[in-house]
Image (cartoon, rainbow, N blue to C red; front, side, top):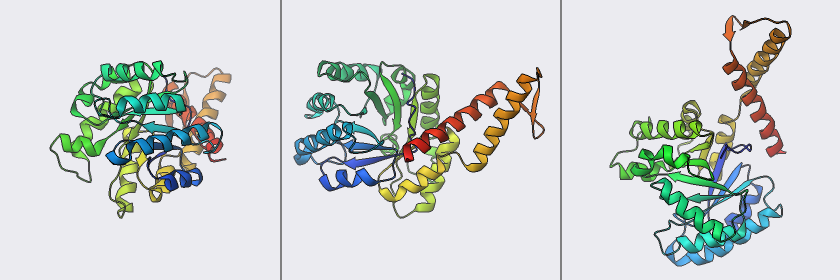
Length: 293
């Protein structure tokens, strides 16, 4: 499945058991919301959270959350709640379903079978957490699995499973980040960077957002509203980026009209791939304007 046309600069995890948080999310400057039934919900609250989240997803279909993309993260299929989560989510009809603890394409297929049997809407996207060593090793097959539209990095779990240590450079997960971006781009998917856990370290968060942008990620998953403005700003094309992109498109168009085979912009050769990237940035900016409106 091709990547979604909507922006993914900031995707906020919301605890599914917190009704006040779900209500507040309607006013936040965020591209997408992940209503979480997994990590953010205690076992005693799983069923209550499922009811709240599915009701919110139904309300979102009626416009309650504006243009924000609504995704629900289920519990894993090997837990006591996973299957019932998927059945309920399919009926609620969110924009996307996020599958945790996926290790293979077969895991995706098994979940998709349950979702379809429960009446999953054809336009519902399938997002997959990439948070285990097996998932990273199977990234190509997972990205190619039916209905998958987005890979979501689960770097916190991945570092734990690797017996590694968190570093500011993210050297411990750099290979995994690169592999998932490669898999996403190879199959036309969106790919989201993992969360930053230190809410007091705004400078570190912004540095990681910039690193994610440089690596090729479409946006950042976040855990608190205080992180939204930086993620939105860093993953949006800058004014300079857009000026340069429009200059490239205009110069290339003029050269084509004049029958010129070589295009130079500020002394640099412009090829088709540069024009395509410029067009992507301009289109992204237009989508962001629509979303923010």
